[in-house]
Image (tube, rainbow, N blue to C red; front, top):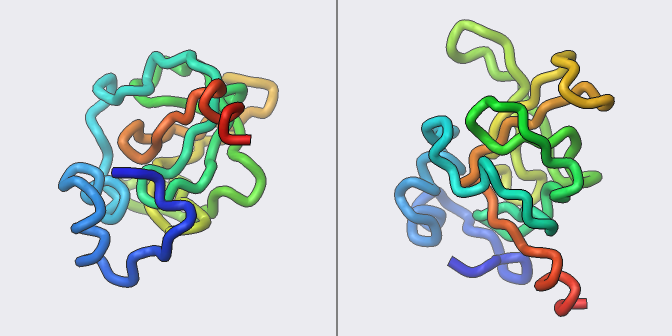
Length: 142
């Protein structure tokens, strides 16, 4: 699937099903989670920008990525205006769900107060929710 930043977003879940693979749809549109330690970006240290896999919107800079040893890629901040937050009371706990501000796709969850970084936030994000645009590609696009 190519980045969709310059195209209209699907208007229905059926249109999203056509655009996304079944696993992408399960996570991005149905709020699923990929198994820990299985995502392609868990150990990635490549400089660049992580974009929403559904719509291509920029979400996170690699400069904010850190290893939290949780099994999913972790960041300590999102790009300004890139995400929105919802209270998630599933699984017998209260968490903060993180969604793409552009297409409202599920990305993962944010946890505060854990002390991993000075920003004291951990965005625990599914690899399948994102695509990494390496810095050398981003530089050529400018």
